[in-house]
Length: 429
Image 1 (cartoon, rainbow, N blue to C red):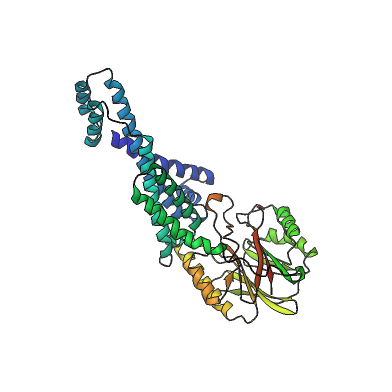
Image 2: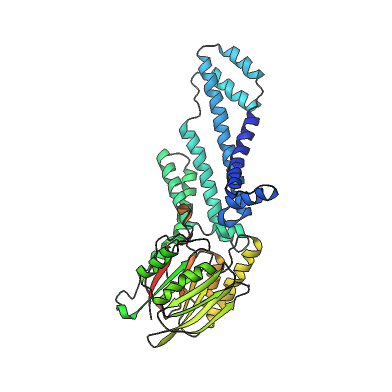
């Protein structure tokens, strides 16, 4: 009976999560389960949704042991105050439960001083499980070159560090299980080592005059987003010299046209009704072109005339790596972008939604090949996505610049209805 209850609890939680996902999609029939899994997995697709349900099942199973065992122990210990232990042990032998639980209940009945499973014990087990999960995910991120899910784990360094800190504090307070104190410290250290360098050294070029600065705004507006006025107001408030956009649908293309009043120069490309890109500039744009990097997805290229010099710009938006095919495709695009950027003779600004963080091995290879640096360096990690899940914010929108270009400042913009935050940077030659 106890096994049946545990199995029911184990299955019920993932089933409930999947049911909520299916209801949210509004679909029925054979396509409902796949759509529900995709909804549970958010932007990462069906496989991610299935993984989350499996994890939920493990968590529910772990929790079920405390629920079933603790309730029965409490029940028989209460009865012991009124009935003889011998009668209760005989009754326990007849119960349709596992032998392990029978032994536990008999112990509770025959030993008046026996303790019920306490909160400290429950929390201890949960934090041990959290320690194991945290260290496994932290290490798995370094194996990103071998698998899509491993690479996915590489993006959440901040979250792993914060979880490690919480676990460390717990074990320090309870003063037990020193091994898990060391495990949590290990998680803190390896993730902190990936985060701290982004806050040092202090930015240079702080004394540059306003006339020497080039402000660029990047925004993934999100195809389904209809807050056109908010985006346009944000652009007017930030007053960039150049504004670049990705996920520009045909409707977004029409709405953004009003920016021509601020920006006399513009260039764009529409690879489909949903996914286009656009550059609006106060500075002359020359040599504008569209290029594909190992994929049908197109990137927008242009040269900008600034202070008597020519700066090359590349606006990119590689594939979203939610399936093995798109994962491989995105990695090929990043490699091809890096190789192309390495051949550009002018000072270069590479900007866009890269669909990867600075901790991905594929990002690192691209930056190394291109000889570029991330404008974030010295300003922090500046997460930009997803705005609908702040606890898992990660930095996937980037400004990469060549050595001739200095970074005065970089910051994220306000929420404007997209799942990405805008990213604004002030540069200097």
